[in-house]
Length: 290
Image 1 (tube, rainbow, N blue to C red):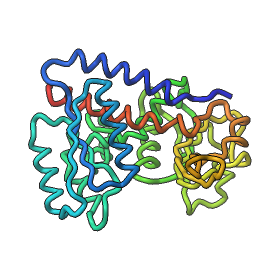
Image 2: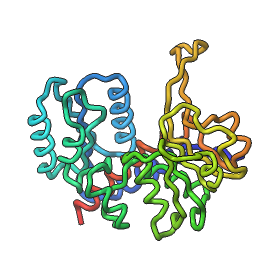
Image 3: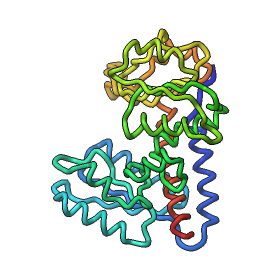
Image 4: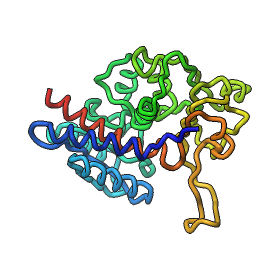
């Protein structure tokens, strides 16, 4: 069994992006990070993004509207960032506090600055295999993990457990594309799938993104399969100072001995998400200069 080290692969990509940014003419790429409210997880995520951006040489513009900001004012803020030629990428940190309409806010971001990859246009470009769009960061990170760990998807059966617009649907579409690093046969599974273990056992590559702690057990996995665990779940653990531990959607202890390759949680897919955001920002800066 080979452990796919997301931290190591992410650090390699960060180093590559640092060299690319240094070679760009003119001003540094700029990423606008909009965070509404003081949700602790959101504060932590934005700080991590800011730190990684600084390491690469990307300018971060942190914008902190009050938690009481009306929907119209937040959309006006996005409009202003869309029109600002010094901003290459825009990210609105989720979740947004109620009653703000998250979908409307994400849709307000101009597709060419949507470095989170959630805009309908960018999701559509994945289906059209149009590389001018931006791929959502977690699916992009999964594909990079597979490629850089030497996993060729051509002709393989990829089973995606989950159908969200953030992970499940786009990663399945990426694996299906007719290009190097993809060309897989893809099956989507979800809460309405009958006899789920019978389908997951057919997977050469199983991508678990269902959001249920340690849901995938050994009896759901084909020996020799590659396992990509997207889940990040907090479960109670009184032995930890925090009172909880992080686990994935895969029961690692029972599944790992069966797998040919597997991602850990933490340290697998998670580190890739931030570096893919930076990769999208560098891409946006290049497109703005072309």
